[in-house]
Length: 388
Image (cartoon, rainbow, N blue to C red; front, side, top):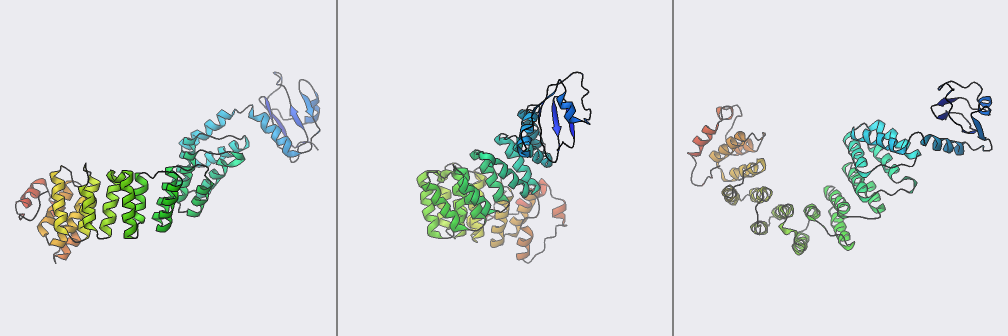
């Protein structure tokens, strides 16, 4: 059975038959017109300077492999990987996936950073089908990607809320580091699967992997029982991570959630160096628990310590003003909000409503605010109210 079509291209041959019978090897000839169709391929193959090497095989797959091997010599692996890398960085997902098909045929794999770019592109496009194809490629033909790439793939599955696939990949990992464990703990915490998150923390420690500040700040949100919180706080102190800003802020938040304001304040007072994140946590904790006086006192301390208020701070202070019926101070906070160009809305409208008043955003105060008007309001403030 003869080939349906054979065309000579440069120093190689492209064959697209329904059933292949010939393995062809030939030498280039300067006298041959490249691209010329072959009407009688069998006769041409017998003529010099080209020669037929073998006609023994009848297995199409073997012939295809031989031709792929021959073509690979004319398309170096470095060029295939280079094209794939370029498509990934250009976020050209269709071409990148086609390049993966070529890499699969030639048993090629790119570097970890390139795969991370491709997976990020898949995540941005919501292309979960392509993520699974990349997953299959990474573990094909006995290839074992490094932990960095697997962690990125693991995180992508988590972002798609595919916890079962993420868990299967996690169990498949030959080596798990702190990023691997923290990713799964965060996934279960965000899914409100608190027992699983805490269980994974226990397994992580048993596996000899030490939790870091991100692990603890994440798993603290999974503490749905006060005894568990206290035990976890004790473990954090033993590791010395209680001085970390994110861990300390998470501890204050969770103690405030449970109404343990004295413990939240104790954690705050143990702070050696200040940070706006921690200040916002402690002010917000007291404001949410209707202790407006202490929230405003902490706000004063923050200002005296040289920290500038952000939207989170002002939102908590407004909540405190609502509880204490400090209308003038609430207005002052609103003015300060606009002078800092902080986006609307804050809770000022709801705060004013609780005083039985209507503060229209079309009022002269809203439309004609300036630093001078803010100073004029400050002169009317009582001793109980704080200055901004």
